[in-house]
Length: 102
Image (tube, one colour):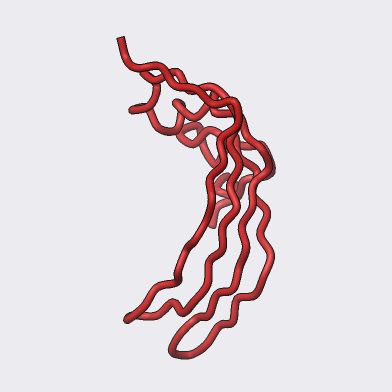
């Protein structure tokens, strides 16, 4: 890995990848095994503005998103050739709005 590929908080990986306007925190366990890896994680975000997401998903730029979003999710289960973990979560929007394209 090259030093320029390592991001620090609020610093992009490269000019092609601006920083995501979303701070995530995770907690839990990852058990590495010879045949499978077992995940038991929770992933939560801080409230984040929807205003800048069109930089990451250009297709939504026309909708002029506004408001706040917050994510709470869990990732549990085996990761191996035959299975993948279950991901369950809730995405909460507060004072959110979108406008149809002109």
